[in-house]
Amino acid sequence: MSYHTSLRRGRKAATATLVAAAAAIALTACDSGTGAAGAGSSGAESGSASSAGPSSSGSSAAPEGGSTGGQDAAQGDSQASSGKTEATVARTASARTAASASADSSSDRCTASELGLRLGRADVGAGNIHTPLVFTNNGKSSCTLKGFPGVSLIQRDGQMIGKPATREGAMGKAVTLKPGGSAYAVLHTIQDGLKDEPCWKSPYLLQTYPPGSTEAMTLRTDELRVCGGEFSVTALEPGTGL
Image 1 (cartoon, rainbow, N blue to C red):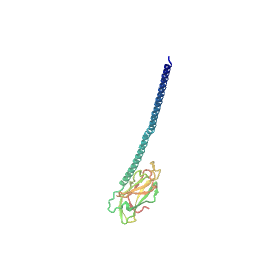
Image 2: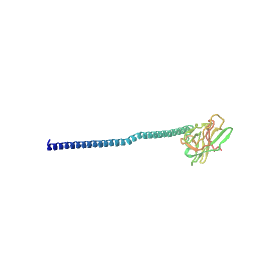
Image 3: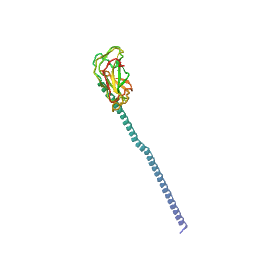
Image 4: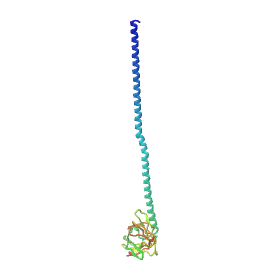
């Protein structure tokens, strides 16, 4: 083999070696690029999952908030319903008290707005308790009262205690009250222990309707306690009952 032939073969081998090396370098570079792209894709997926996490958490919190709101609304509805019930009871109590008053249709009948109201001194004897309920004419002209006032005892929430006072005795005659004049009815109950029936709770208010009136009058008192289920009122008569 000649010198030139050997030289040409050596050059070809060297060229082939360089080409193979370049191909290997290019392949390595491609593999490295694919790995970087994969890492970028993985990072994107990881970022997407991280964003979904709070969103998912927010979604799960929303029903809880909605549930709490529903409970609050239900509680508000329950309180409103309770308030309406108490108001209804109070109106019913007033209606029952008014119904127990006499229907006085006199043209000069004393109205609630003209009258003052107070309790007289209780008279206790032989197990009975009699307390005067005194009406006073605070107006500027004379007026009349005839018959039975409607009387009931009311607790602080507006509900009636027990039942309205029943009527005791005759209707009586009309009583004319001059300005400053008074008429009274007698409230009757008994002492504790005379009957097995327990005493009613002490009242917050005494509520009364003068005969023929549709306007209630109230008196703050906790002293008038009914026992044995005995609670009655007489017709009005002149004076203060003292």
